[in-house]
Image (tube, rainbow, N blue to C red; front, side, top):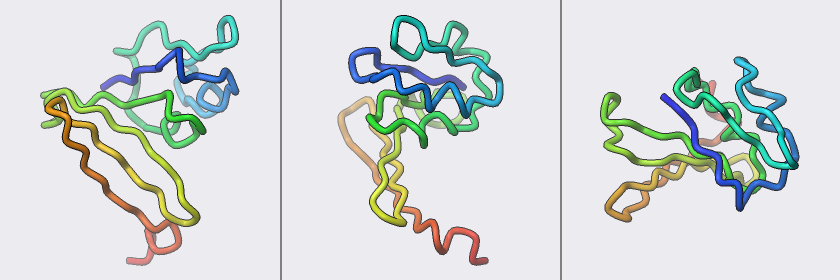
Length: 103
């Protein structure tokens, strides 16, 4: 499991680095970087914190993702997970935060 950080989109806010439980993300020259993406635990905390969608999670073939990339977007109580497939398709999964622990 690993993440990818788009240095062009990154604004260097540091939110991703602050929530990374493995302290794998650092801010260097006003941009977030991960030197060893293979060490990523796959918790996705950084993805949910990035306000500009610069951090994406790589869904490798080993977990059925076949190279898809995932990022999140927020809209009120809705957390939208966007899966970008290699063939250009995008799958959206909406999670209502108020009801996510209901069951």
